[in-house]
Image (tube, rainbow over all chains, first blue to last red; front, side, top):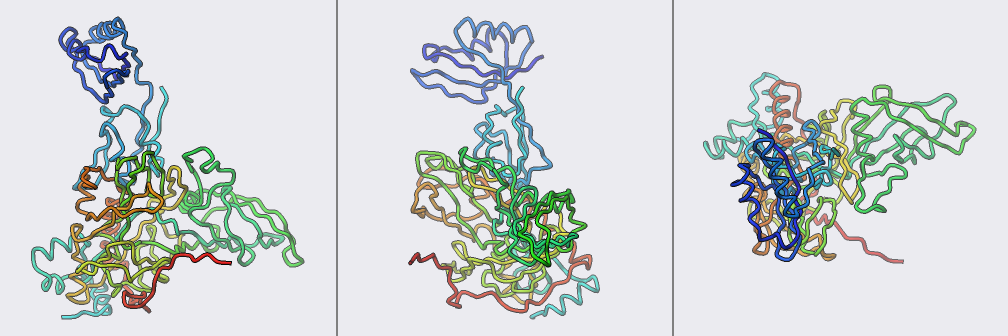
Length: 136
Length: 393
């Protein structure tokens, strides 16, 4: 089983295509939508996590390309330096994919990398430089 | 039955002292009632950890040979104030490093400044010291550049003119653009709400009328031991209060002092607020002697009984948009103008809890003794007010 995170941009005429459904049905991929900005008449922007057989992922990517979807791999990466984090929780309301999780009992912040789309907003707001944006 | 601080000190000496944190006090009062809790508990520990801009250090770095009377001084390229005796300087937390682009590249990153120098110094790192002078017959030297380390400096005294604000605004932004403030990044159209208090754990919220905390109170400061030196700047005791005497807006403050050589960089952190500047996050812990039932009742205050004003930082007039309590704020969501808004903290509750625990341990182990304040802060009846500036010619 392989895993990849992809940034998809698709032109307005594809907004009504059941792309996710086809990826699941025809290629047997598990799709996790991490972030989606899709509006009628506008270019769509979706970040997905895909999981499945390596060859199937490649076939799925080919299918998307044939449709005219532009695909970029997620080349950025966020590094959370736990030692520097003071658990102030400033990042909590800003993270668009809720990759930072606050345990309300312990008031402790943790980071779920799987959910992160490396948008970099947290890097901007962290007062203690506990987050770094790594370019791939 | 009332207790005295001397009696509590005696119990610390004998290893019999009963100490709980302000959170534990809530549970205890819940279970056993105020009367029993007041009798049982000797000390309640309170704490907070967050950015406190009005902080800094006095340093005496010793005399060079030949001597210099410092006129201008920099520590790791961050200017400090030298308008004191020859080799005494004061470095403030919010001072920017020379040539920092500040907000010329908006929003500025403010990666390093006074607060970071303080953290590095306390962490035992070598610091670059540069000084210039005009030269006198008694202090002929005009330039100096050397590395210094905290262990070789004479005095390194943390002195913070304003710490531990009693309550604070909840910051939101109703404008159409992102704004960068000392309360963090605020998204437009009520995108988030940032608050900054440890609520039920916060020192002055547990002694709302400054009856037991005062000048001379020994405290946990930046990981070491310090004292309350005075009331803090902008101290404002006469504000509106709830029935529980807890202020509903920013009110009391305290000035603190302590030996930075004994402190820990974990509790003195250089802090960069995007688009705003640099500052220092300070860990503060204050013990409250439970002298009587009244004190016990005040220390049992809970998050849901402490209200903070929601203030719109997106408009120049800083419009008031209502009130929320700290239980709601810590739950992660509050309702503002009918909209559900996610909350973010600036003050670390986790760190505050940790500090209250450390102070409790120190007292139980007989390493930390309570002091009797030598004078009180101006109280709510004192006519002491925080005035705006009246500009004139």
